[in-house]
Image 1: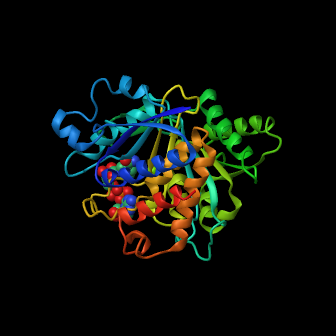
Image 2 (image 1 turned 180 degrees about the horizontal axis):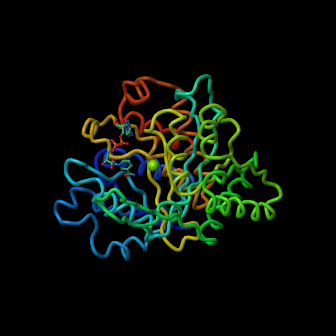
Image 3 (image 1 turned 90 degrees about the vertical axis):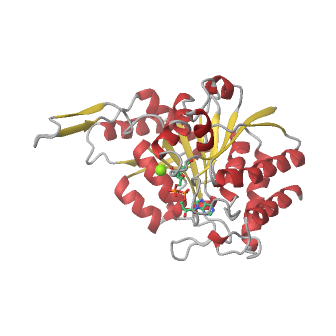
Amino acid sequence: KLLKIAVIPGDGIGLEVMPYGVRCLEAAAKVFGLSLEFEHFDFASCDYYEKHGDMLPSDWKETLLKFDAIYFGAVGMPDQVPDHVSLWGSLLKFRREFDQYINLRPCRLMPGVKSPLANKKPGDIDFWVVRENTEGEYSSIGGKIFEGTDRETVVQETVMTRVGVDRVLRYAFNLAQSRPKKKLTSATKSNGISITMPYWDSRVKEMSSSYSDVSVEKYHIDILTAHFVQRPEIFDVVVGSNLFGDIMSDLGPACTGTIGIAPSGNLNPEGKFPSLFEPVHGSAPDIFGKGIANPIGMIWAGQMMLEHFGFSEAAAAVLKSIEIVLGRSDLEVMTADMGGKGNTQTLGEAVEKEILAF
Ligand code: NAI
Ligand code: MG
């Protein structure tokens, strides 16, 4: 099976970590005999914007539709282009136009990485956050009336469709079913939000009847986020609406150490459109140009891509390689965000070498 990958490094440290992401994927391809084809693009960057007056070429959609996956670095250089222009002009267009309705993030404490939570060791934190990525609270339905008067009123509606809710729940149930614990936790707030959230709960209940081997729990989002911090061991797969998922998908990885290692997938599971894999972090202008960015988030995003497309053996090897390198805690290799004296190159090459040794 040939996997066609559009490589878009974007801005800032996206440009610095991407080469190591690609090298690690190439290493996995070599060891496991995979056919990966890469094509590089300079659009979706602020430099492209300064040259062309837009973040993307007009034919971006046709161009990217030829690929199975988009391997994305980061976008945004606030001193060059305002963030809402760069983000809405690129990444958010990809997510929406390619119907990437699942946002998937692992929350996994890695060996050698210190969790900000007390007394946590690898294995204690190992779950997935599945976020609905296209509807819910992030609708554009609403408005403002009586502007500038003391009756000024703003309204923004939450939109939940049966198709939209069911497809994210189905993905989450399937993911839970594929894991040893087989446990799904649903984020709700049906005590306070009295129409949409009870609807969400009813769809969870309905769907759970076709997954009799998956145990289902629900928590209100306020106590659920507290449990992320106090009892992360209880989670396996956690699913939430767009807003709740947004919050959980930042809090979860934050419980597992530096933002520099966290990856994420924006998925169109049916493969009708390309899925996008990226590190959670942004372009980090404060460290850009120094060559010290942590490349693990980028490499791990590539690992998620392999897993998503069914290259399980190669994906397992890349994850293991990351764990081996981090677990050594070699300060000469580790980047500064993990207390090391190494740089993007030392850490990126260490992982690549480990993959090649499989
Ligand atoms: P950021 O994630 O770029 O940086 C936050 C902090 O984490 C900085 O101190 C940075 O040095 C550090 N950091 C981030 N990644 C790191 C890595 N790999 N290794 C070591 N340290 C790392 O978030 P910030 O500063 O809020 O945003 C900067 C720009 O990135 C903005 O233009 C923002 O819009 C954009 N952004 C883009 C995202 C994307 O492309 N998906 C996501 C988040 C922000
Ligand atoms: Mg967020």
